[in-house]
Length: 293
Image 1 (cartoon, rainbow, N blue to C red):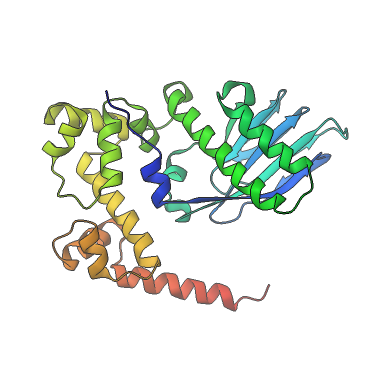
Image 2 (cartoon, rainbow, N blue to C red; image 1 turned 180 degrees about the horizontal axis):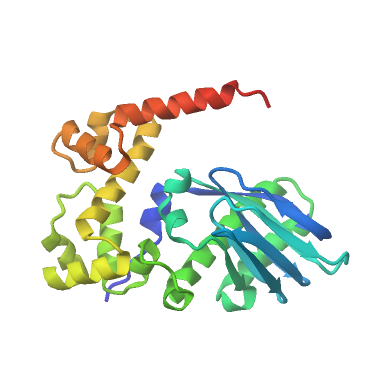
């Protein structure tokens, strides 16, 4: 089967920005608060620790005994418990996902992912560069470290796709991209959402019959192909509208025959028309700006 880039079409349209904010040891209890639209990526370079967070109202405590990556893709308060020793060494970055909670990867990743560094092939060179920048105080150090954290994150996403079946992920985007038959179809939908897609044309991308494709898609991704395509188009539409595109322009780019057709799909998905949704977002932003710090 020809190579299919499963990540580029998603990450090109929904960027993830990383920002280094801590390097070195952490001693005692360190709490990382939840902020809307923000996640965390921690690299435990050396030492051991215990991490605690609440998931579905239940306290989850984990003992980390080897160098590891800890990914919190969604806002989730968590705490590190470290012995007061200089052997504990971290590099920590915040993650700002384009689109916030609507980012396709944010919606499908687990609340927390802990992966030993040794399990991620190809990660060592990126980490060597990252820590070389962290340890050597030079001009542009933080900016370069931010970019290298993005490299580390993409390496982690690659690992997740390669290990999706063993991670027990819920049906969704990642399980679909990890499926060798569905990945070409999903990547084509992501890359060219405005094409006049039909069930038959999607099935051809997967090399399956229409019935086999529809059944497999529903089982692995968790919804019918047409529903997924509509959700993807509406998610893209939100980004375009936030960026100042008109409803007419957005509808045309996303493959709708008329602005009214796009507005109907948008309203069915989000409960508001595009203009009402934009007005609500502007009102919330104004209200937030009016609150003193």
